[in-house]
Image (cartoon, rainbow, N blue to C red; front, side, top):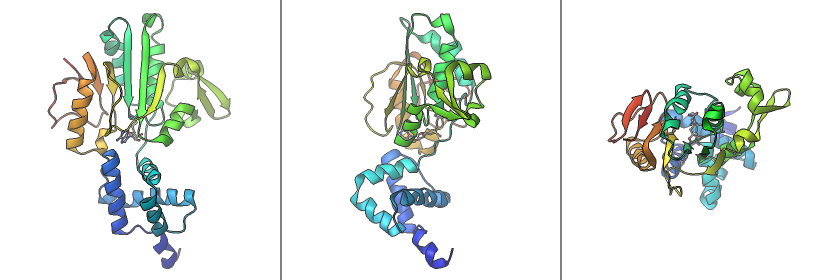
Length: 270
Ligand SMILES: C[S@@+](CC[C@H](N)C(=O)[O-])C[C@H]1O[C@@H](n2cnc3c(N)ncnc32)[C@H](O)[C@@H]1O
């Protein structure tokens, strides 16, 4: 590409600042200077989707159309996930969380569920407990800011590569193959899950109490102040002995919290 053509698709420092400010204000996601390339690529994606000729035209649209702000923030989220990711947290579900159920009522929240692998893994883990959970009233709430990811999660269709993390016996039990390399989740899993859009920075309509909240690999993108505020809010929604899981590269170190440490990246309410 010649320099002239590139000038149309280069992000100026002011435009980068604008996108960074928007992401922080809406979602709490912090984008440092090293993310300029990523932000450019994601804006280019929007630009192409809208058929716009230049960055300037895109930012003009952003000024006029509030719906585009939401779409850009969605585009700036990081959505990496997988089935049975950090699998000890699903062992903890079987071995410890289920024991916190009162009157056989089990409520789990996957906060930042991305494309659905986390809540479907929670559902598979519980279904695999079989008769042990007979008569239990089980509901998994799965929320995310990203409408793109929620659409994928609701569709529940995954390719061979994504399915590779699921043991073959579970694969055929809980998914049906729709073509050579596509699998669709069966109703027996889906019926345990309610998907809903939710920005963690906004109002939370649910009252709890939850037996467990999984907010894994979400708060790593937030600053300390935002994490502290969220941990306080999550704690208030946990039932007695309810569990709070973060990603394995995260911890509550440096935050003030009444939660007690249980095992790596897992905490519980007293
Ligand atoms: C890296 S994924 C983690 C997915 C899953 N929890 C896991 O550990 O595999 C992070 C998710 O958090 C979501 N997210 C980021 N900021 C959010 C916010 N303010 N409110 C709700 N979800 C948010 C993103 O859209 C993304 O899908």
